[in-house]
Length: 372
Image (cartoon, rainbow, N blue to C red; front, side, top):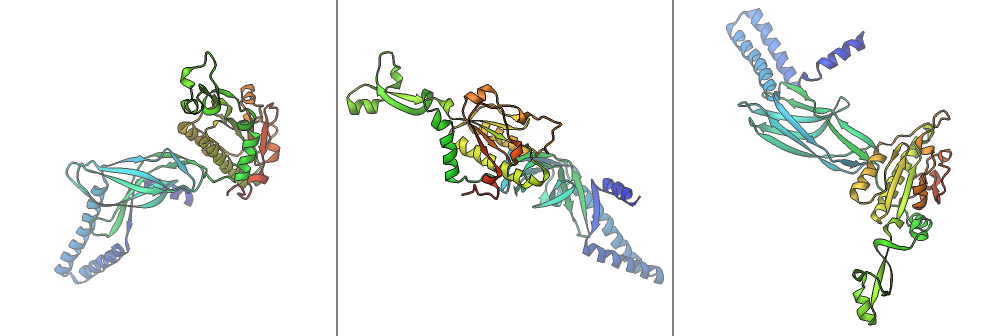
């Protein structure tokens, strides 16, 4: 019964609430004392003072209410956030009233019914005007960050009480795992075992593969003029096929509850590996449970992979379900080079692939030994 009543009061006070300040409590006690003195003595001066004090309370409520009315908010969050990496969020507040200004506004982000103080204060907002406020935003947990709205508070005009109003302004951002540096020896082992070493052959691309003598029928655009001038022989350059630098990275989502911390470390390691290979010009494909990307490279593709890692969730192992990550790798993936499997739980291995596979277990990244 008591919890039900609290829930009803919470719903009623979500959009509007009023709380007396310490000064307001003292003012109220003084008003009660004047009221008692006026009733006991019948002195007209006490009644006049009491009327003035009560009018100040009424004026405070009306002025505060009008300061909080007809405000408009627009929020802008970065598309992607990274854990423990500061970012900048922007909040635009506009006074939609035609002739009344708003005073002494303090703004709070509302997240899971909790008010987050960002230190945003607007001393005065004239009618029809707007204000752009920027503030640092720091996410401490991977996943989907959802801000429900904005709560506005004011103690205008006399500071007797704080009146708050709630405005639903939704903001959503993906919080990606932190990117850490990888140990040089680990990266070297991956590159030696990977496609970069085993599939080095010429093709259509941008990286230099070889310089040789010109043959009849060669494209004149491939003539290497610097070498031609140095050797006095017509030389052409051959490029390495771009599709050689490919990697399929698979993150196993299977792990028991006791491996929750190891799973988060595996996600951080996977994000760091994806970022490292993307900076080296690899075409990457990421498989994380049911989420599968296509091969691609460049910053937009890297951000898409980070979104997948931001939203992936650990799955408890069970024989009754057969998830997508238990399926074998497709043939086109097997032909494209090495598959790198990151698994926080050894029983969560992928099988059935004919591609050269590198397994990275918890022994590699547990306790963050991969950070150089």
